[in-house]
Amino acid sequence: MILAGCVGDSANNPDSGTDSGADVANDTAIDAPSTWCSKSVHAFCADFDGVSKPSDGWDSTDVEGTGVLLIDNTNYTSSPNCFQSSIGAVADAGAWVNDAILARTLPVTQASPALHTEWDMRVSVGATVPAPVTLVLYQVYLNGTSLVQIGVDGVGWLLWARAGATGGTRYALSATPPSTGWVHFILDVTFASTATGSVKLQMTAGDAGAPTTLADLTNLQTTTESTAQTVSIVPGLVDPNEPTPAYQARYDDITLDVQ
Image 1 (cartoon, rainbow, N blue to C red):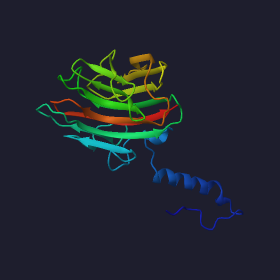
Image 2 (image 1 turned 60 degrees about the horizontal axis):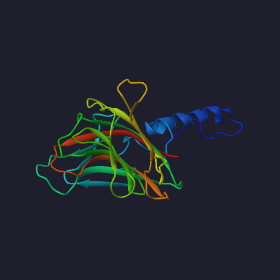
Image 3 (image 1 turned 180 degrees about the horizontal axis):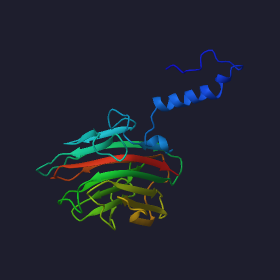
Image 4 (image 1 turned 90 degrees about the vertical axis):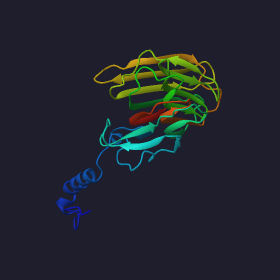
């Protein structure tokens, strides 16, 4: 790249100050166009723009059964791409899993970290899915064991909270996210080994101003561990029960912060 006005400038040349600085700034703006993630600061941010595959910038992926990970450049909330997770139809019951997920993990030092994550999601599943399907759409973890899941089953949309590696409790969401467009989700989780943890899920859709609270759980034990090491977010479809129809879910502008 050639910067006009830079070659031969010196302290005695008035062109070596403001003009050359402006040239550098202008050229930098042209060479490095801004993306959605470049406009704010987060511990982790993924807008799937300027990448060649969905996993770029993520720690790991898991694709099982009929799962497929794609970049979609036809439908997004920030141009030009979003991440699409797809699973195909499975006709018979079985023990294996259909999934297509990404994972991003951050180290933490707090004994009871507070995780804040936001994402845009578009998935046309309506109010329920056919029983016995439990379609998991988004997950957060502490130390890879304690978790919170957002999903939908034959009863309706749900939040599943598990303190440890097994068990857990299903909580029904207070409203059904619309299935005709993009929805912005906000999830706050405080992990605690005593009954001081909390989980709060909110959404905004369309031109809605204030977010709608879908779940607000307090005084929870959200982990069985007293030492925090990592927190993780996992977007993408997981269907641990068969049979299932085919599903697609799109994700964009995912952020993760830890307090």
